[in-house]
Amino acid sequence: MTDTGERATSQTLAKESPDAAGKGGAQRRGGGAPATRGRTSIADGVVEKIAGLAARDVEGVHAMGGGLARTFGAVRDRVPGSSKSVSRGVKAEVGEVQTALDLEIVVEYGVSIADVAQDVRENVIAAVERMTGLEVVEVNIAVSDVKLPDDEDEEQPGRLQ
Image (cartoon, rainbow, N blue to C red; front, side, top):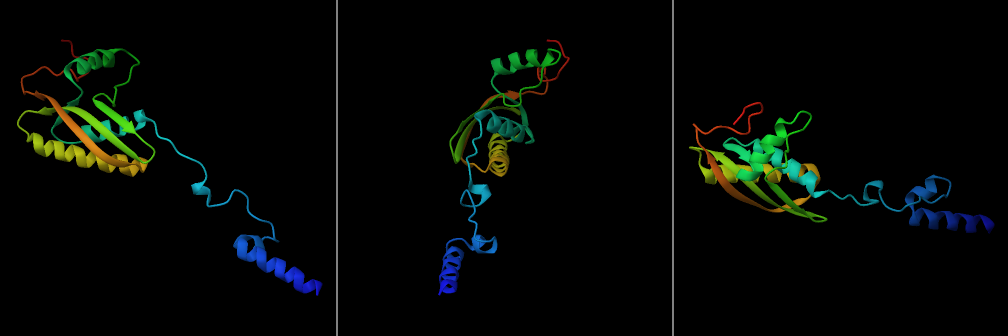
């Protein structure tokens, strides 16, 4: 009869934890798959950088940010050892599973602003969702300027104004 009791205990463990029976009856610790243990948080700045780079990749986008931000950014970019701010012109609000983005862009003269805005939205949403796993609920775009062909370009490093 002792044999039957040990068999019943083994079967109970096997039903409760399939891995336990195969490992000499020891139960797994932690519970659940390793990928589901813990929490991942993504800073606003991370999403802003991803969105800024994705927006700049769109043809017809000349620069990011408003006039004053671009001016200060251009001066800061000329300082030796400084790096270009890829999140200039981008504001993100990041929650646990969703994010919303506000972008301020400068477009090239002659391009369709509606088409550029649509392309920016598509590119930014694809990049942010692919890299972060967050759902992008909205991408608001403000076109703050148009780059004319004869305008000086404050975005080019090493050029004095």
